[in-house]
Amino acid sequence: DDLSTWYLRRSRGRKDPAFFATLHEALIKTSRVVAPVMPYLSELLYLNLTRDSDGTEYSESVHLSDWPEAEELSDKEKSILRDMNVIREAASIGQAARKSLKIPVRQPLSRLAFSVKSGTLPEPELIEVLLSELNVKRFDLEILGEKSPNVFVASGAASVANFYLDISISEDLRLEGLLRGLERGIQGLRKKQGFKVGEMAELRWKSDDEDIKKILGMVNKGKTYLSSVKEDESASEILEIDGKKLLLSLIRK
Image 1 (cartoon, helix red, strand yellow):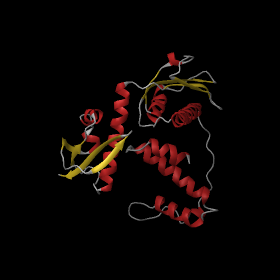
Image 2: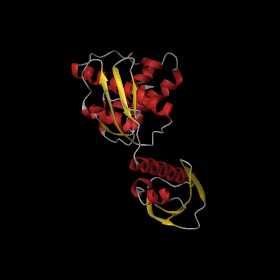
Image 3: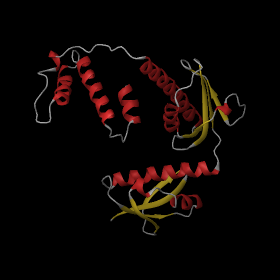
Image 4: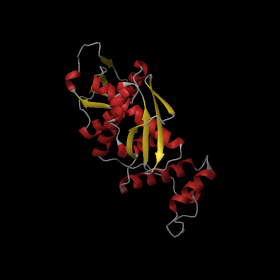
C-alpha cells in the first residue's frame, strides 16, 4: 500500500536511476515475502525481475531464494522516515479537510502550516511534497494560532500537533481551479478520442461564460499537447466545470 498509493504516485514522471533501483528492490523483496501465500504470482514477478537483458535468470526460483532480512537504518534514514510520516499524516488531515469542506484538490489554496509534537519540522523539500499533494501555494508559520472563519484547524493523532489550512479562495485562485478542471477535461477528451501521449491537437471551443473565456487563454498547451486554441462554432463535446458549461472539440494535426 505504501509503495503503490504513495511512493509510485508521488514519483509519477520520474526517470532517474535511483527511482528504478528503489522500485526494483522493493518488488524483489515483496515477491520473496508473499511467496508462501502467493506462490505462482510471486514466482512470475521474481523471474521477470531477476532475468538478465539476454533472458538469463539470476536465480532458479523465488522459492529457493533467501527470506529478506531487516537492515539496520542509519540515523539519517530514521530521520527521513520520521519526517515523511509527519508529512503523510499532515497530507491525510488536509485531504480529509478538503473532503469535509467540499473543496476539490484541483482548487489551489493559498497557505498552510502545522506544528509537530517533537518540535522539529521536516526538511523544506519534504514540506514541498506536502504542498504539492494538497495543492497549496506556500507553507506559512504565521497562520499558526490564527483565529479566522477562513482558517481550518485540526489536530493529528500521531506526529502532527496542530494543522492549519487557509481555505479562503481569491479570484486568482478560483480561476486557477477552473483552469485545472478545464485541463483535466481536455486530457479526458484526448483519452476518449484515442490520442497518444505527445500527439498534437487543435482545440476548438464555444462558450458564452466570461470565466471560461478567461481560462481558455491560460491553458498550458505543452501539458495538454495543443498546437492552438480557437473559438469555433463546430465544437460539440459538452464539458461542465463547477456549473459552467462549454463545448470542446479536438482536431488531429
